Length: 457
Image (tube, rainbow, N blue to C red; front, side):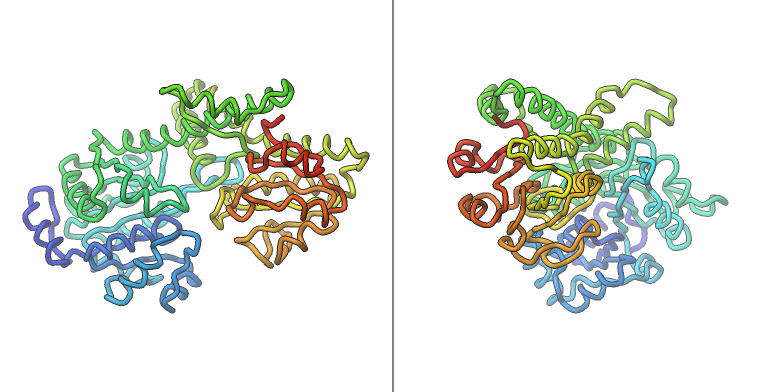
């Protein structure tokens, strides 16, 4: 470990970066943490990843790249492993003391009461209390609500007895990740990053380090809570606009207007940002981020985030709307929903990613189960496995054979050019519900399908 990486010692920092002696520890090597760790290792810095997931650690140690749906990093993985620039462990007590910079890329999900769960960060913070010394730099990349870093997290690292002191024994900063699953390499190379710290001067060190690794713009923020507020604002902006489009989609269905035609024309105006209807909003970010802001509001006793609350109601209702479309289509051919066989195509929360965190498909499945529907699932990323307590099918034809209806939930590339004649041939009843605008209504009708789509005529 290089002693005292401080804002007053940039020359030493530059030398450590140049000669590769700076040591990096990334705690949490999942969807974002592993690509982050690989990027630091690729830049020439010795990097160690820490995770409590023993199976993940064993996979990496066996030389297998675990994120099959995250392109380009497989080559980086092979390179840094062969150059012995990257290693992994489950033992944080051995990794942290030997490193100069500790990056935290830990999950911040919601609990059963829709309250942000920061237990992973707080647990690691408590561990760091007994491991930090000599001015090590801790950088939080996880998405948290404004004020969490300055209050709960800083207190946790310093300890109840305040045996550690920020700015002396360690430095604390944030650089919220901004990458989109499935496009992380592209985002790492192009998107600017926010940087802030408890001691404002240490931001210079963070900026220098991240510039070396990612070569993107680093935007200095006045404090950590402002940086976290920016991250949440960008994501919740998207969440609210998706809700707006979902509301319009339900209206336009009744008015016999195609929502996608409206969006295509509207985006010609310079200040319109296109968002698209869907069966809901999933993943570890957008649904959680709105609750993080609502939790911040609750802590200060406020009641003014009414648009966010309304957006949540709309987006969380969309799974019910999908089932209403299904029921309506089945009624057209005098088939009851109860007892019907329904196939879901795609269960991931977004296309081309093997991730079902807070996926709308789960809500659709839960609603169908209450109506005693026989459910079949096919997803190219989850073949012959168990998802949401249901065994998935191994191939497309088996999945749709004998089905009374198909719900296209996730627009994986595999589903973008469905052979509609195959649906007609293998299904018991030719009903299809399209949640993401993958199928043209005219083509579906011409093929002989009973078609319903969110926001489609």
